[in-house]
Length: 452
Image (tube, rainbow, N blue to C red; front, side, top):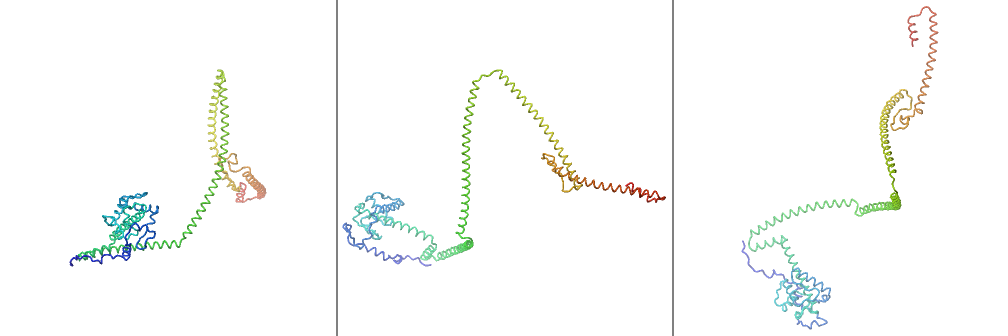
């Protein structure tokens, strides 16, 4: 193991100042500042710094004071009055607080402020004699500029410190190098090896994690490329929007047509409503007239005197009317019973008609009248032809008559043939009687012919 080194760090570890630092540090005015220097209309070009002319404007000055108060309020410090010039004590307290935030502890502000501002390269002019009355209208803009610049510098340093701390904490490589160097300086070789192994293990895990992320990203890239290819092959955004626009235009046309139809319907309904209003007004007037007539009739009835005989007569008439109503209900019940009996009889007869229709249809098919005559009973018919489904006189009767004429003709032909055969048989019998011997088999044939 190496011995621990206790040497003091050399000056090479301290950052060297930049050339601009020396230029700004020694470029200030070396002559004695006095009140007369502010009265000069043409200041010297050597180390005068930037003037605070913009801070003489009320708007710029108010904006700077708002920024100053925002910083002071975030640090729970005393604020400057925004609408009036603060006192000299408030200005000096604010300057001391800002210098403290910049790590400058000042015991006597009149002696230290100029050197501190000079070391910080303040771009604005400062005169020590103005600290006696910093809140005068002539000196106040310069102090606003200096305080505003110190606030910006303090905010920058705080932000830089925060970012530097987070950078060191989040940078594992930096922490590894720092711990390795510290262990090396202390001579802890075992700790260095252990730290190396631990860091390499972490680095391997991070490498695997990065490779896994790369694989995931590659898969995501392939999916994105597939989606991009699908987008290229499919319709463009403009075509899709144009299609949606055409669909929306068609919908708009339909909606306009519907609105037109609704408008027409509303007009028709308004016309109908107007007519209904007129009818209602007419009905109201008629009702008023009827009410007036009823009132007049009531008055007349009230004025009239009733006779007991008329009342008895009215009672008898009411009794007669009641009796007539009872008799009418009884007769209506009797007729209903008759109607039910008649419906039952009609249903029974209709069933008989259906049976007869079936027999007639079978007979018609046997007779071969032609044209496919068939009875189809209809219960809803009102005439005989509608009930049977056929008109007997115009459809069935002509066929039956033609069939009867044919049968009659065939009967006459058969009768003539029978007469001829009887004549022939009589002649044949006479011839046979003239002979003496008749064969027995011929007699049998003759008897059969006679019987037929």
